[in-house]
Length: 532
Image 1 (spheres, helix red, strand yellow):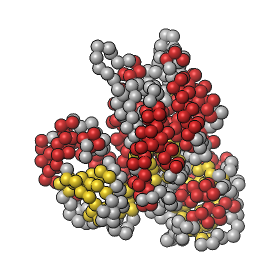
Image 2: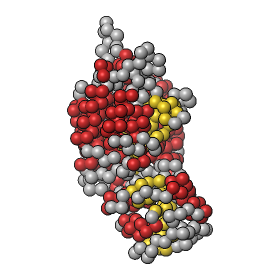
Image 3: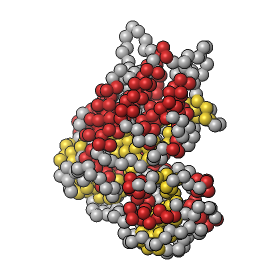
Image 4: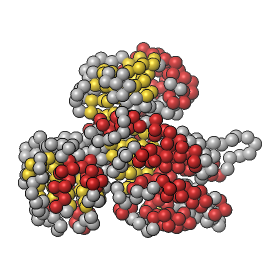
């Protein structure tokens, strides 16, 4: 494995080149055919494995519950290796895979000579344990989804039928769901005791007017699936981020079936200044492969791409946006502050440009759930933007500190979300998204030529953001099932001179991972036409 690839692994990021080179020297290449069990749960382990190519399925047993699917750049087996405990899961190659084996003896020797490796491994283990626990929460008992209008329960149940035979339907007080759909069991709502034993999904038809029992069921539901403009009581009662607006067409019903079974597919798009243009190439390949995205989140430059996905804008529109923002961020066209106080530029012209793109739409008008991230400049806290004017949310999310004035939304004064969450995978996990793919260009250094001439102001800002992103993003990467990593370069935060090359890099990086993406989807039970 090349040192540059090793350096991008979560537990090696930030380590000196000498440490990475030492690890590289002791790795043993392995070729593992598809279907091979790498190790079984309960076995003693003396090695961990880095995935160079292919995909591994982590499950409770060879045919048991799938806990995770690991693609290139992942590692597995480290708990047994470091702690001397039996393997906690069975790992099987989903595709023909190329692995690199690290034995305990070599690792112990390396940790003596390179203590920074031991510290980095300990930190990453903590992150992995937290991420694994988070994934397992909520997997017990049937998933309960409230459906409005109640007349759509039958259609949603029919869409679920190929995916699950253990479906129950019920009408909440004041609602009528009509005839019991074929293959479903009709029960009374609410369910008590063991009435829901053995069920996988429960669909609860919601009334037009709220009542106490319907409100309790709605507040407790995994998701509230609404077709059309919902009554206000549903909006007010649904847990934050759990109300999903859908169209009453074939695509909308497929999405409803994935939400109701915990198989919704999410896409998270990182910050990274002009380098986020690469997301356009990632989106193109996913669309060409007919991979349907059910929810999307983005930060800073990734917020613009996320909005394009959420509102189903085509690539021609996205390319036009790239050209217009490149034009708008040229220093001669920016609205300067005289004298500068909070930042060099006001950023009002950018907000006006974003409003032109969206035509004054709100975040909640999107075709699929959309979350954007900003940071509160007063408290330093992450602020999640899920409703209100889209133009304000995009402007706030990319308020680069020092470059653009903070942007006020309600009681918050907001700056660039990259400060707190460059790759907001946690948002999608918290929203109940079952499968998460990420596109990450954050943390890649801008090209600064060191010589007699000092770097420019925007280059310095870009370097500062890259440094922060590299550290903050580590806690988010393990929460995604697979992260695509286009390698792109820019001389500053607003250097769009190589946009076409960046898009091509996104295309290439995604095509290289298509087989892994298909493996993740199949392991999660999501139907896909992408070849293995």
